[in-house]
Image (cartoon, rainbow, N blue to C red):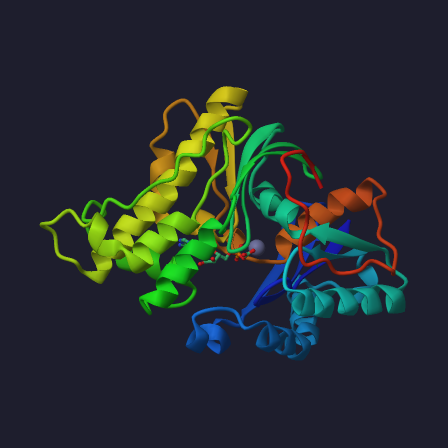
Length: 337
Ligand code: KG4
Ligand code: ZN
């Protein structure tokens, strides 16, 4: 079965053809980074306009690289939530038009579940496991039962982890995307120079929740208060210390969830899963199997959409042409979606 995946939820315009949910025949990702860089963040209006320009050539490239004609496709899978509404609508409308014109089934895909599926494109992973999804919009620690069913154990009560990286990078004008820039700068810094605060909200039913707004405020507005008094107050030191705190907050809760649930496999996904310190820390954990997707499959891509779309297609979970884009999803601690 050959599925075309289309992804346009944020600032990556992507299309991919995947066979049988596993074999990537093509994976085209056009990044809009250069257009958003001057603002140190994604400008929604620019993002939608670029998607409109790029969506057709990106899909054409994906088909050409895969050596598959549109007629040979078995279905068209597309991200319909969550994300920037204008951006989502471009991919979704294009997918609907294509599916309609070709008489092919349409499969709406959830971006969060697609991120968690990404490492399945590269290796056999058995369910259930502990999923740790960290991106610019989401921070989720979940028990993953199947590709389409997760139980959210913990989430952020305010900012997403990647968002904190992006906001700190924006304030200090370190670069864009913030996570990539901080990861790079942190390599030359001392991560002990500042002892930034880590929240403790692990009470009641918030056992695996995290929070990033306090850390963000401390790094941006109160860094002097957390300085060790002897190291240099330099940008690399701030970046390294922030990164250590942000990742430690996450790893601490993920390990607690793994311990309490007895799940011995942790699968990470999302843009922040590309972080080198996170990878290093998790690799050092004894007695746990920790799986990270390759860097290209951490950040937004359409192979994960086509991959998970295959399983929905095989299960007969097709979408109607009235499927609409959704900016957000309710993120309570309960079965998701
Ligand atoms: O998954 P993604 O491409 O898009 C969303 O679904 O949000 O994730 C983008 C996020 C951004 O916040 C970006 O700063 C962060 O992932 N990111 C990183 C790294 N690479 C990307 N954060 C930390 N370290 C990295 N190496
Ligand atoms: Zn994403």
